[in-house]
Image (cartoon, rainbow, N blue to C red; front, top):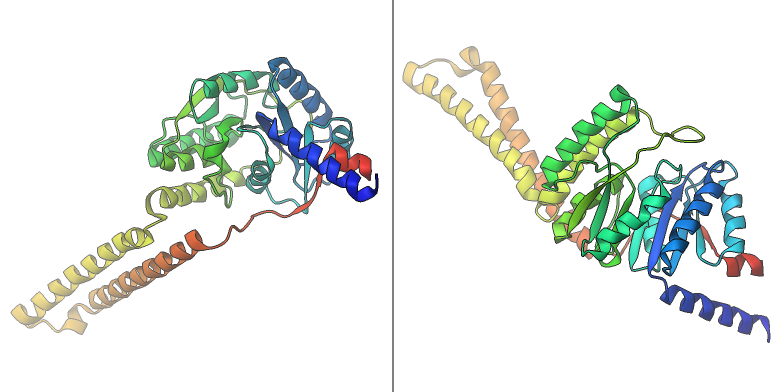
Length: 341
């Protein structure tokens, strides 16, 4: 058997194995060399006890430590492991998107790779999926984070996200979730919107439930998240509101602001003209600043309308354009490819 025949046979075996996969666990990793071996051991033990056909999809998000080499060693000895090597550090949302695009299972579980999520809780998520839910979201009911730096901003952001989206869950921020493949395939992730996946999926009518999970102190290493993430969440909430309410009709979003500006300009102009014609008050002497403000508000209103029209055109292009990825994969590592090398 020559090399091309061996390659074809290996490819056929991979395809057959992936066709049998029922569950995929997606774990984005960035500089987690200290815990990745323990994470793998606990995941295989938990998933093995379920008796299900599964795969573990580890996404190395441009780690600068030994994470990738450890993952490759694991993949070389386990055909259920897929390692996706990104070209650089893209961030958690692109890393999750890369994992979601590569999975073979019909049920997808996502979780962090720092062991703050307990792999032993995965069966609780699968139980709810089997009960008919499309999305099962973890809820860190008793958080162990710093109150001022993490708990308080998180509570405020979660409350706002719940009100904006109409999805009644307490914890949008955790990555620990389970999805049916058919709903996650409806989703395109951009920016840092991974934390609002349930809200985004609510647009298509996904059936969502929340379950309590443990919030464990990070066993090793240090978190890469700081207070700066809080400010990014604020902008993400604004984006979420736009995506949920106006992504297909941006003129309605900008048109409302334009209406307020034009209405204010009209009222100021009416007041100025009233004084001018009824009392013969010189406009630029008595109402110069007001006249200037009215002109500025009218101009701003026209700019909002123009922005909305441009947004309408961009929206059409967005929905009709080809699928553009927000990440770049250097290589996908599996046991077959690693042993062949």
